[in-house]
Amino acid sequence: MISFNYEIDFELSSESDFTTWIQNIIASENKEEGDINYIFCDDEYLHRINVEYLNHDTLTDIISFDYSEGNFLHGDIFISVERVAENANEFNVSFDNELKRVMAHGVLHYCGYKDKSKSDALLMRQKEEEKIMMFHVEH
Image (cartoon, rainbow, N blue to C red):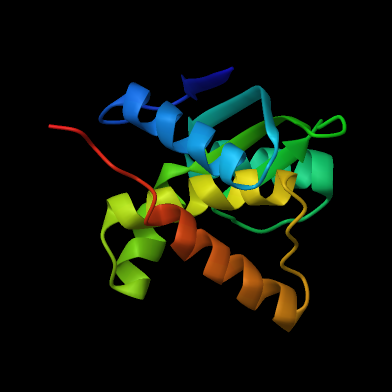
């Protein structure tokens, strides 16, 4: 089950559209949907998690805790909405596009994609773009 939690004054425009999209990402990687929790927060909230659990004293846009078992994806994905907005501005993309990139990024980690080396990061970016293109809103 995909769930969305809000620690700040922010809400996705349509949780059902995002749920369907994330389910499609998971299926496109031949994985199974487990329990994935998205937690939207601010910089301060995510910074505390970064220091406490990862011993990193830096701001970040996303932290994902992977509890996957075999092919079943489970985890908690914390996203700083403040950082996403700042990155969108810096990279000259829409907030919506940057948010989708970060949301896909967390799930892609659960699918086994890494981003520490240059080649891994390049593949991750390609996968993020591929998955963003999968987002469709029916009208």
